[in-house]
Image (cartoon, rainbow, N blue to C red; front, side):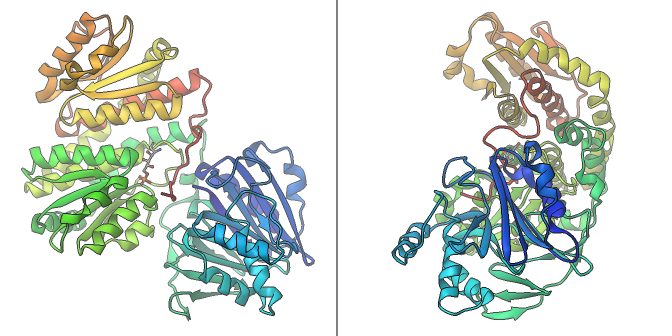
Length: 588
Ligand code: M6R
């Protein structure tokens, strides 16, 4: 939700912040803006829309100055307009700010500042920040001290970069992502490392309320401790190339194609951490999995597997609802949070609610150093590599694989689980091959003009149906809805009309009953698509995937990811940037 980027160093800042911003635009693409300090003036350029398509580009690259900030916005407060785009400057133009998150007390602050004669030119909460800093500077404090005083009084969750006209930068993180890249005589600040990985792999992961001061060198002042602190520099263990599209037209397709490799990597994962977390599950009295969106469907699959393979009962809940169930948690409870980004505000709130009740928290996350990882007692890293497309694909299947391994370890058969995953990666190479994609495209041609697509699954295939519907909606904007097969006759059958597409996931122990559901909808005129190991006369179109036993959910979702990609292309939608969505949802 919004991407922020800052640079201060020995080079011309403008091309660096523009490049950084383009890499962050998957976090929000309603509007963009940059601010560069040069000779005591901050030059600001901004507009509605995406920076990639901005007509101002040639001019932007020429802005002089070695310190700059930039922002790509996912609108929260205020419409999508040029006026509301970040950066926002103070009334005297000497301070500019970019901001990700929400300032909860901005209305009081705005009222106070208006009373002091400050004028406001946007509908945003952000604009109060540079003006609060200016307010303190008018009282005789220098920029850094004024920023410190201002930041102490902001309520909410945010990451902020403030630039003064002399090129000093102050940044703070509070429950929103912000990392520091350390180069040779230069520093980068960004919502995530993909934005500066081309320049440096040396990273500082900040703690809550750390305020970074870049004025020549870099210092970190913690606002809670009211003291300067030292934070270690870590090395990023993946490559800049992994965060690039390479020869692919879209990150979405690239990431779908990477899944064979990812699953193979997980099959070779360090078993120690799987065993440790399985140990926590065994010890706990009450286990709850919390997650949002796609990760919540992965969690739901976890329930089926824990029950079937490990004979262990766990609960799952979408993270935004979890706080309403926290009352029966105690120090023996275990909460497992699943999140690709590790920065999803709802998931972080859920674990904080759990911790407030004394529960232990473990997490499954793809981003090393994320807030979720740092706030968890233990974490398993998904190792899916950077996931850039807004729609999650490889992160989802890696979550399924990890939850599967935990279930296998709980039943004392971890070796069997890892062997199955190894086998599976070969099947995934086939499922993502050009031929397989062409075949799925034929289905996309048939479905591209439909208004509704329904999906049915039972058992572990129910979350598969939910996730497939989620993918189709997000990227092609076709209304797609999933049902547990047994539920059709309790209501959804009323929706069947002639030619309505039903995609049916049939395999294993649920096959017979799922075929029955398919027969029922077919009898009422539905167009039935089967996905599974065995064809059946009820199917009008059939996608064959091999029987992968407990990992069927992994192989069955892949043709659906490809289907959603093809539908997006055929309907003229951008598969990497679905409308109104952002990759990392850092506001509640
Ligand atoms: O980073 P997280 O896994 O916590 O993100 C959770 C959801 O926001 C995310 O899965 C979302 O549903 C994606 N757009 C799915 O494609």
